[in-house]
Image 1 (tube, rainbow, N blue to C red):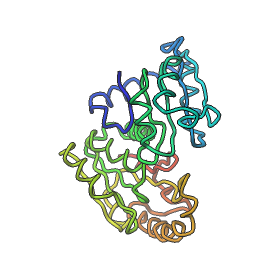
Image 2: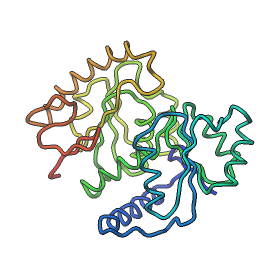
Image 3: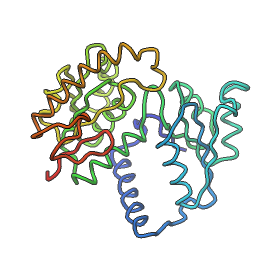
Length: 279
């Protein structure tokens, strides 16, 4: 039995296989073909935090492949009315996979430890593996082979950035990140990744211009994530300076910059990603 908690569980070959299957399923969907590959299967969406894209993508994906899903919110008492061990053991007897969206990463790890079915991390404070896979799959669709490309990230070295860095290391993509002082990757995490992924290419800087200078794609995220509301004032102040510097930095690789960071002339924009076109 396999889990997907951080992406460390997947090899490079397995990520490539995920991309190949995704490409095939997407092409068939565009042709109106919906193969019932998950007929009779049930996914439990165990969500502590609000969600739009993650929830809808999992529910829609299960439905399009012939399966079904159950959305389980606060009312089920995950880790409250009974231990996580008992909860996970009971829930996994009814469903085929559990997708967790939790405030604390350890809660997902504990659920995976005791569950009798695969557990997928749909977001924690530490990692967002499905987001990283979807983002790099988007880059692959736009640019083809992404090995040797550079993905620049401007903002907080948060859960999304951590998962992107790990995925980039496995796929041979250089990762350049510009963060304000105090918001960088911690040294322990970087040392761990460099030890497990000797091929990892990482540039950390406080200067957005330096991060995006050789970038093939530029990525950012919200400055204040769910659960960080108490830090809103300080984060708004710190990251507003980063945002202004980022727009100036984008002038290095674009003739003009619009009011939305990283949406600029000569680029194709996918949510928070700006990708060089014609490369």
